[in-house]
Length: 392
Image (tube, one colour):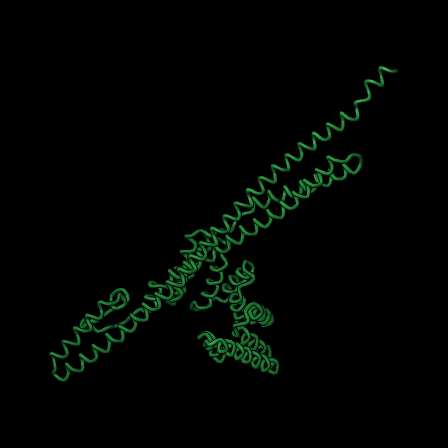
């Protein structure tokens, strides 16, 4: 009996030591997961900063290019007027038989023509006398600043979306680190106590660790929305065509961008708008694109604005009102969608409601104008276009 008692006495301490050893191994493994998650969080933070900077750089470059381009095109258009006036004067002097003075004005006109590409092919064509036959002002705008500015702006927006996606990943990693800290705390407590409480802490810790590890893996594998730059270039070209009123060419360019990146919301929205302007308009396809764009970008007020107009054109007035109202909710500084609502009510035969909606739309426009004047600015030109378009 004495020998048996001596052999069985160490069993409990040995089991305790084994339990602590396994807990130590488990704590070490969780620590490795914490280290890996910290590395991923740091990488996500670095990527966010990189793409945020790239977004700001492109936004700044876009603004600078727009300003410089508009100044350049304004100056070029002024030269066109000067060119025409000089030739008119030369022609008048020629009929008065004042050939010397006429020649001087022609020379001055030819000198001015050298100051801007706008007064040369392919933008301007001349007759055999040197008189200007036609000038493609919109094409000059597109080539000078519209396409470049649009591309830079799209690059800025795309980079901002990537930065936001990395920021979301980083936030998820931070949340995982907090949970891992709780797991380590539970396992540390389990190593200090015994019995059922130890097993409770161990099971809770393992469950949390498994869930969070899976979440970290899914977060790591989730794709970052990255529109290929060539798709951005096709979009910018499409915008340039639309600027010139070449909507069929614009649609082809937008389609190429969408083929390269099917979830390109801006390209879908612009292609939808272009379909409104084809001859004849393809309202159904326009609405299809705008609906797809609205699903991808639920916060773009202009998409719902155009969608509301599209629904009106095909007679779906209730949908028109709903989409237009959402546009108004998304942007308090536009009033065009309010006119969509009013005309839809009128088309539905609700004249009294339509009158109230028109009054509300005008009041909204007035509020926007007063808001701009309160800060020393004039209301944007687009606001008056909205009101004029509504009257038409």
